[in-house]
Length: 451
Image (cartoon, rainbow, N blue to C red; front, side, top):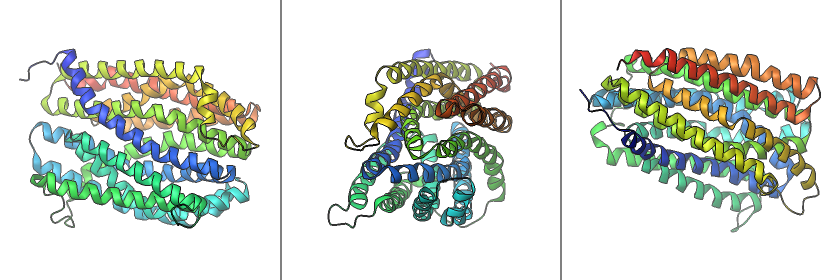
């Protein structure tokens, strides 16, 4: 029987895991922000094209990352009971499934221009986005394998290395962007193609570092020894847990990608402003995501030890921390929106005033969904720790696809409210998800682990 932890001990354990994960997510976001900042300075068309292209690539990536996220609770539960063999088996099969998926989604990325044109994007923007995606497709498999290894290390509570590897990747990406987008350091000026090449190089370098670290620092897991050997049982376990996570991610990212498509119908200025507001909202979201992953690990441990009281106390603290940070974020977005949006725009760009005006309005909308966005992702993390993924997938599909996307279209396009209406649809979808997922965890999910 385990000794109950105090709230102070729960807080230390949660923050000990969560702070490095938050830092790693912020460093990961710095990569996207660097792309947007530099491309925004390069040209508005390049920024709009990458906003569109990255949204499409991210949808495919986040679906495939479901198998990586499945590794996190499976490894955490196995580690709680000292089952080293199970740790190795599920992580290896997570890598297998991620690699298979990454190869399968490369063709639509390589030949994306007809798809972008078919969904109503402007021909010039679609052509530029297609160039970006064709190069970015090369990094799909490495980026998914990186996700698996990061989740494996997080489940082992080795979150510091996840942080520093991601920080190093962000620095490398920034240097390569500066060289390849603008033609500095003797490199050719390649614009958005340079940003894509920088991203691929960074992903490959990150994978190499994580593979070397895992092999040398965790030799007891023998992670890459006979990696080619299939393991049907572990493969099935990862698949059963991972595919609902992937579809849940698809539903949420699909909501945001659909909003990008709708903003594209309003023109390049609206799409550029949307990209800036999404980047800013995503920065703060990374804090909630880090807390969510830390909660998954803590709940996974509690599941393995059958510690119901610890599970509940840890969940309460994760939710409270998320709410506190969301409150601070709302105040920030509402107090200095012009400054925040202006960071992404060249002061000399003649389109700056129009983009700034749209972006400030959208950031006010982003303030509305901070509380519910944090609540829904923390609830997902808690449920994944319980290895409960299928019902949350249904709730996500209902909230985002049945409610959120139609609401965005109705208010933004049909009623003519423009960007404000599209973003109000985002708020509605996220609020529904938060309510349903929290209800699921507290009314049914926690009952699986008795006090």
